[in-house]
Length: 461
Ligand SMILES: *Cc1c(COP(=O)(O)O)cnc(C)c1O
Image 1 (cartoon, rainbow, N blue to C red):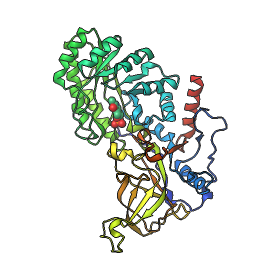
Image 2: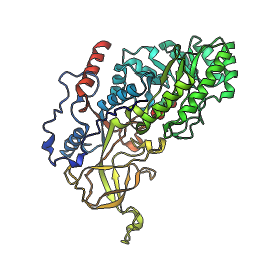
Image 3: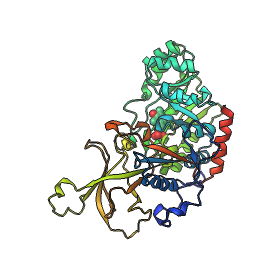
Image 4: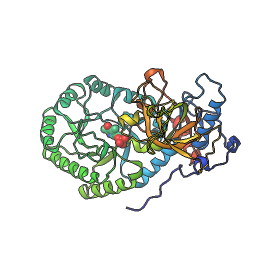
């Protein structure tokens, strides 16, 4: 496969190499559109996300609100758009069905709807959320949860969502009762040992169970239309797609033996940003090898993380600082032990739930220190730990990292790549609110993104 140009709006100078003055972004037009594209949604700003990180900090430091210093996300929709262009360049024959659970952000859903993506929904709530946008036909939804409550199956029928996955016999009985005209996709088990989040322990029929399941589906007069798999979320060895597609081929042949003519191959999610081009090559080669004749097969995927991970950054305020207990005696710390603990105002019960649930390791960078956005590269560092705001000791964001010695309460730490499996699973444990999102169309093809959204908005009224 040919090498693909990777478009990334992150290719800007890092924050701290820029001039040290709030005035340096006076040139950026930060005002939201006078004419909001979606009047019911928060404003959609112009300008580079870094500018909005700084702007949010300046607004907070002016202290106008009771919770002035609260943490906030900046979402760059241009980054989501860039990922879509990357997808289309690398996998032009695979139709993406965005996995809503990864980040059901209203702007992200609208942009992807406008770009023609489909949606992978796992519940009534997600189906309703996608259909409520308007302009998304229920045909563009796959109900990709193999184990559904019967009321959810009934509701899918009512909403006109016909495509759904299954991996067990009971599901077939439920669907035969509640949605006999459904178009079923059999989720098979594949090797997910090379992924951060293995899904095979919960879902997927092993190949040797496939003939029995298909015979049962036949007996119940159900329409099975294809095969799906998921190599695991956060897949770090994209060569596993080869074996997954090979197994899907075997399942297609089992389908033919059972009298079905499958027309859908769903290659699931698992696409990691950094490995995407590599994954696309493995996938394309495997599909060429095992499905050389694709004239009657539609191929879809269910990417989640790939679309949103890089699009969201989080700004957090240092609300407290103290010495680790064992250091309070005044003894110097062993070199590698943190010598200071920083407490920030979002944690593992909020946006950083990705540390617990999604096995992520996060690294902070200094957004502002001592009222300045400029941190000299020569700034002396010390080993530090970073903690969330709740009273639970599990609420540790970063057990050890290097941060400037001069960092104090009131300074701000930033985190990139906070778009996947973060906002969506944040709780309000201990009375801490979920961090709000500031939206921008960024600097990369911003006017294109706005006109895509604006056109979509006029189509759905
Ligand atoms: C979570 C999930 C996805 C998305 O996975 P990513 O690794 O975020 O791409 C896709 N399909 C199903 C069925 C899922 O459960």
